[in-house]
Amino acid sequence: MERLIAIARYCYLTNKKEHYIYFTSILNARNVLPDIGKRLATIVGEDTRRKVFQGFKLSPVGSPSKEYAKFTQIIISRLETELPRETCKEILTWNYHNVPAEAFNALKERYEKANSIDEFLKDEHKRFTEELEEFMKNGKIWYEQEITPATLEFVRSNQEISTGVRHGDKIYMTKIPYAPDQYIKAKNPTLKRYYACHCPLARSVILDGNPKISSTLCHCSSGFVKVRFDALFSEPVKIELLESVLNEDMRCRFAIKIPEHKMK
Image (cartoon, rainbow, N blue to C red; front, side):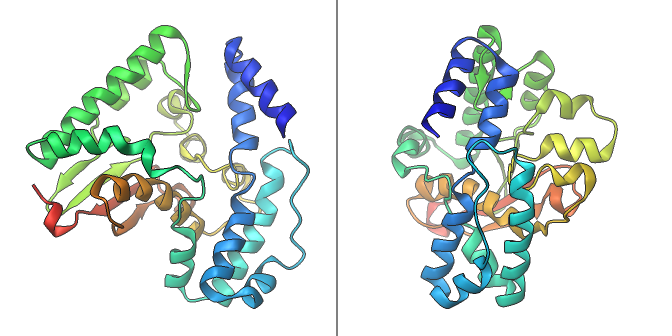
C-alpha cells in the first residue's frame, strides 16, 4: 500500500492526471468492505457478520476496482437477506472514509456567522466554484476530478452540486460526477451513469451490469454526505437518498433534514 501511495503522489506532483485518478480509484475504498463488517458486528452482532462475510477475502492491494465488485455484490445481497431494509440502511449510512469532524471547522464557523441558511449555501457555492476555478487555472486535480471550463460552468449553473439548496426544512444536494467532463459530453445513458458514479466498489458494473449490485449500497454515499452536515449542525442529521446511479438515475441526490432549532 505504501508503495502504491508513493507512486500516486508522484503522479500527482508530475501532473500525470490520468494515472493519479486511476490510483485514487483503486486505493480509496480498500478498507470500506472490512469496515462495513466491523460496523455490522457492532450493530447486530458477530454471528451475523460471519454469515455475511463468510468466504470474504480482499483482492491483493492494487487490484483493479472491478475485482471488488464481485465481493460487493455478495456482501450487499447477504445483508439484504439477513437484515431488514432499515437496518441495512443504518449500517451503510456511515463515515467509512473516516473524515474527522474537525475537517469542517471552518465550514461550521461560516455557517454560524451567516444570517440565514440560504445565504450560507449561496456563499458556499460561490466559494466552491472559485476553488474549482483556481484548480482549473493551475491544471491540478481537485480530489479525483479534472476541472475543465465545461465542468466549471456545469457546477456554477447548479447550486445543488456539492453545496445544496434549501427547500422548506431540507437541503437538497447533488454529488459532482466522478468524471464531470466526460459526464457532460456523454449522450449514452449508461455511460453517463458510469461517469457519475464515485464508488470504486461498484462503478465498473454499470457498464456491463455484471454482477448487478443493489442500490442499497448507495446509502454508503449518504454517509459520506451526512458527516459534513452532522458537523455543520453539531448533531446527527437525517438524510434521504433520493436518486442514485445504481438505481438507474442519472445522478446521486440527497435530502438533508435541517434540525428544527438550527433553522435560520
